[in-house]
Length: 137
Image (cartoon, helix red, strand yellow):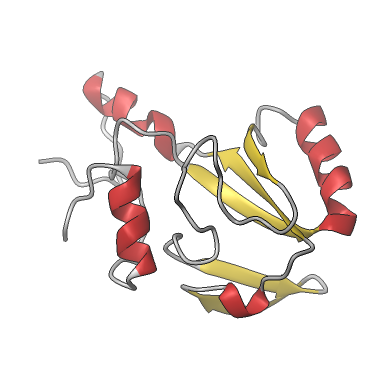
């Protein structure tokens, strides 16, 4: 398996359909996030939920409706194509897993980048704490 050293490396591989696996162990010096994309009508409620639950839902960035580029945390990225796998839900039901959500996107969508545990795994490994799902060289 190819090892990606930066977040941009992973995003570009995803965009070109060359990577669709877990990102654990990749880009060790970069913040990794989970992405939630919602209709604008639900965005404020979700933001309030995150603010009231900052430990499990740490907000790294909110991308405004109609934009899919996280300008602060990943300039040049496209949240519709640059993630290894998307789970698409409609009315609370999983409808598909895909590597590109362009056909599902619209100008009313707000994106949330939430902190992910993969970010601190590298620090644990450097401290000599093994992590089962990361292959150590």
